[in-house]
Amino acid sequence: MLPKLQPLRDALATLFPVSCGGCGASDTRLCRECLDALGCAVDPGLDEFPDLELRVISAMPYVPELQTVLDSFKERGRADLAKELSSLLRISLRRIGTLVRTEDGSGVASTARSDEPLLLIPVPSTKLARARRGYDHIQLLLERAVPKSRPVAALRHARKVADQSRLDRQARVQNLHGAFAASPMVRGRRCVVVDDLLTTGATLAEATRALRAAGAIVIGAAVVARVERKYHTD
Ligand SMILES: [Zn+2]
Image 1 (cartoon, rainbow, N blue to C red):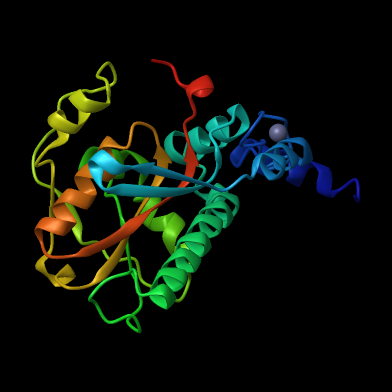
Image 2 (cartoon, rainbow, N blue to C red):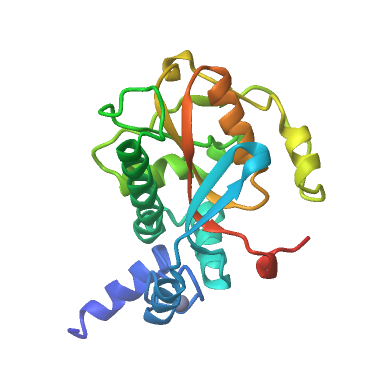
């Protein structure tokens, strides 16, 4: 670099400090080590919850490197990390697309028209979270993951929900019942619910319940990562 440019670079670094969204290393938005750690952890999985009539495809377990990247994306204004996170979400969406085509072929699927595109429906952020972040993070991920499809904001919060961090899954399902409402435009359409994380499945189950109540045919859910027991805090 030309010596004259160094002060400019320093000034820019002060104004727009760049650091790794995973480990905080300076001068890079995502360092090679963190990127490799994410890449090595990719391991798509299918979780089924027969009691909730829900199946969820995830791209990888919720490893510590992903936790910090997702936290930077959601809580530290690092919207630029949508690039890598949306690539992970795309893995789950492709898998669910394959699953649907297989079922269509075997006649297992649904009565809906199989040539209609699946509706991709983000789990909505709360107004408060959206205002804090300046964006709806799942919507942003979806727009990046599938640029040609417009995510359908068919779900909305119908009421406030009590904090549920200390509740087990069954208690969470009960706590969330009626928390979402779905637009009537989903009636008869095949839908995939999209979120960042699968923890207990309660949020996805409530999203699915609301969509089904509005007449949607919910094929399943696609998430970036599943929180496995060893990464679980409760
Ligand atoms: Zn890093």
